[in-house]
Amino acid sequence: MPVGSSSAVSPSKSARGCAGGERSRRPNLKRDKMPPVCAAALLAVLLTAAQSARPDVAAEGVSAPLIDEGLASAWRTLRAVDCARCHGKDYDGLAAPSIVRYARTQTREMFVRMVLDGDPPRGMPGYRSNPRIAENIDDVYRYFVGRADGTIDSGSRPRSP
Ligand code: HEC
Image (tube, rainbow, N blue to C red; front, side, top):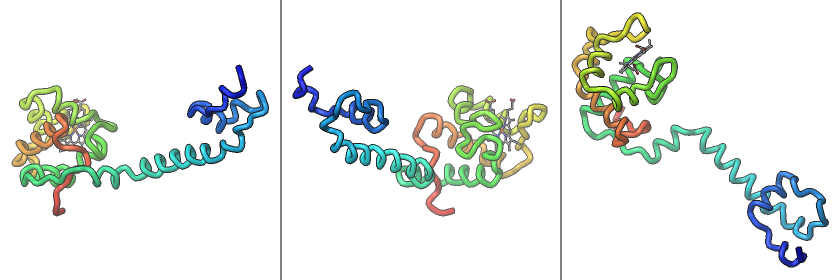
């Protein structure tokens, strides 16, 4: 291959250059141009890491607030009862399965029955005697249907606490 045709440094070659893969296969005239490319790649990695280390901050920035008072109240109730300690901070599964997926795949009837009656032998408490849940069950269901169909995202929260 003529030397001239290999002078264009493709992104993939640059990336391999960063990792040292092309080391001294031939004297590389472009070597002195590698550092900026490597620096840019490294910066991209660092930025990505910085963002993913603060997912809540990123999510809050793009999530619409819960303006609907019923949904806002459901959100507060779920926080107060702390379904998240078993179901995960976004209710999408931890020790217990995802509530969001359940709302997506099961009927309203099944959902309401599961939340009110629970499944005590398997570790799901029943919330029928908890008025915050029992009296807000429609809005609780509506909240999870919204999460399931994407109209509410995990970062959405009420404007006021
Ligand atoms: C103490 C832990 C715990 C808490 C707190 C808890 N759950 Fe559960 N939940 C479970 C477990 C364990 C299961 C799985 C039960 C089973 O396998 O039948 C479950 C199952 C469910 C299911 C059915 C999911 C499925 O795929 O079978 C729903 C819906 C649900 N929980 C909603 C809630 C809601 C809403 C709250 C808060 C009001 C809540 N849970 C609080 C432990 C908990």
